[in-house]
Length: 298
Image 1 (cartoon, rainbow, N blue to C red):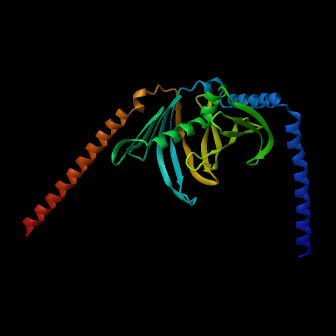
Image 2: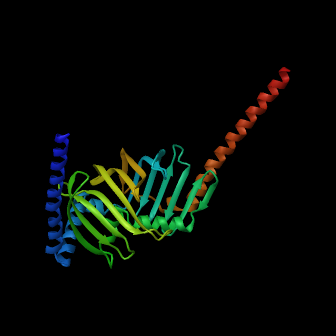
Image 3: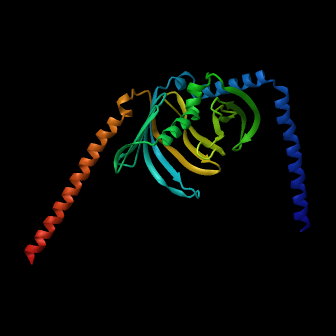
């Protein structure tokens, strides 16, 4: 018992010493750097991260085609299931995601418009969902790095060193005109992103909300270094995990604008509906033949 008490005392003292040592360091960073110096350091770290992600090859990505698995989680945090996906992005504001092995569940976003293809056919996305899509785009890490760093009204701040997910890192903070507080943890060793935290007001509840993305398993594809695993957490609850296939991403393949239209979904629905009707007809004919055979045997 005394050994356990002694060990606990040692741990408490050690923890207090570590905390005391760390707090002045963070405070000192904030005191030493003037706002202009803090902003300059933040911008420097962001540029180093862009170089680690591929530099000009990363910035010059016009479109991407990726495949993988998406894991979804319910409100209780329990895994709801995994699904295949095919994701097509044409910058700056076009996205098409196809789900299931048959690829007959599709979501399309094109600027301020959006459509969905499901078992009921093609429909427009509700206005609040379109607004959510636009908000998610604004705080997407790749979108920020490629399109928002020179945006008027963006405030940059160096937020100090830290240990993030067992890695030495530097925090950079960006405050955008829309009221998002965006913090990015950048690994000291690789200059790659580890985590992104976004604090904002929930548009539905107007309560403060936080969304966190974790990035890992980086590989180089066509000169671009990308994360092959992403975990998204909202207000402390895991929402989804993305696992990209080993050869599942290609860049600058020349995706056509026609892919991101309602007409493209109408065409796909015509194919799906035609197959469904044919399948139902074949099933009815089969059942009819079976009944005829059964009656003749009687």
